[in-house]
Length: 207
Image (tube, rainbow, N blue to C red):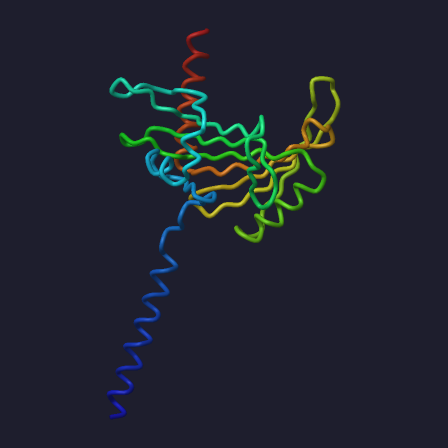
């Protein structure tokens, strides 16, 4: 009887360790923004929230089978029809950016722009830290068109497949509006590589 008990215990422990190992090696899921999930196809995005049908197509990247494929959709909150919030803070604008990948239109970036308000950045940092863990923080000194020095603060959260950034620029009032951007890393890299190659090609043609 003791032998059977030992065997059962060994098998049980082996099962537990196997599950723990599988969970550790499982790839993380891309970040999501309420109903929007980075990496979902356009049809899923449209169906995930009934308000998406009211968004405005701001740019058309290409035409497939005679139909325009949008790469950027925008939900302008003003003139105000309803109050739209994230983390309890009011938004002024939302953007959803798509790119064609393997024959499908895929959501790769969502951008949220907030109203100006004292303390908005600290509220957002606390909310995002609670949801995604502690952020890294970078400070970049900049100059505006009048030569005045301003500071751009960027907080970054990442899980290896997607990234969240919070950008906040001070001290000028027009720069006080925080912007939170959710990005799918792999597609963002592909787009950046395409843009870099296009820029290099234009530079060579101008020589």
